[in-house]
Length: 455
Image (cartoon, rainbow, N blue to C red; front, side):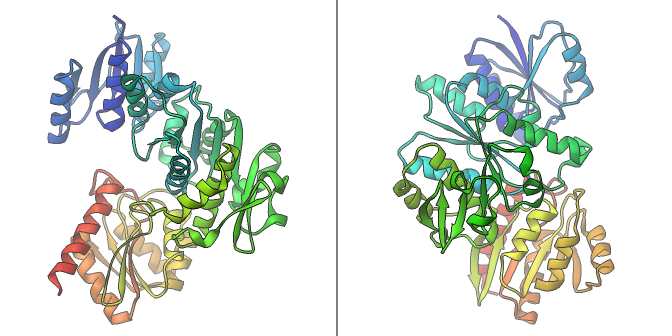
């Protein structure tokens, strides 16, 4: 029996291990961590016959034929390079799922920001059309969970709707979606990819391997590169005349309607999500659906009933005229800029966490225009305070944690007649939380407790 090793005991790693076992591999799994949560996962997998080593770093072994890495594992890890030199097949979890489901058409959505909302919209539309089209990747299921379910049920999905990060693209050499969507491109993950050029090359590779490409023409970087994508289907909120290439094969907004492939599909006001960026997400999703042959009635129904995306400009509660908004998924400056731009002024902004590299100028300018006060948390707080001071913005406070940030934000909202308290961190969560979802859920819980307490 061939032997495979999976690195990383997260949801993706567990799914990959189970899929490999189902395919006839003898599977072991390793993770450098040793938390109680990981120990519970270890017990579950070992009960299924999968060996798990915690507190362990992968070392190549001549007995191993395949290594599958979880998205959080650096692709240029020295031990992975060593394994490749030894002739070991090394792939990402997304690639493993693709190889199991490559006979099924995929929609692959990538981009710096906007991926999750666009993926959720695409999945909702395809499902409204009666298709078995699970969302996976960075949203919904792990990709290998979809493949495992297909094996267990003996029935493949009609479509796979995959949110694909740059980490997953670089470890998925043969992934070739039927439709590829590129939402936005701005500096991010440079600590992993080193240069903006390398980050761009990785993102672009998914689109080059896609049979049809949908690109956001409102994104400055993508629009400037339009000449490199002569066959692409472009989207623009601005209207027909602004669409790069042939507007009749793209999508745009005209007279309040989303127009795709030359036909009106749905009023943009039908989407109950604020912000111009969400109109763009709507256009990309609608265009992908039309390229897949989905009728406009199913598209309109899905858009009208779409509930929004958790942790992305998610309205949590309203108390004494103050809206509490969870935008925990805004893990970089550009996403946080979009979040703050989308709420009414004046607002109280909660920002900070595990800092990332990037251009913060637009974000700082938006803070000066819209934020009555900024409450800073996490590891980034001192650096953010320095940047705000340099931008001549002084109405900020460092409170370190969300537990302290929420009550202080309520006080500041009342003092400044603010209409919203926005958690939009502009940072990753890993200094204080396992994920942005955990951070957003904690914010929700704090808001709910505050509502119930009635202080």
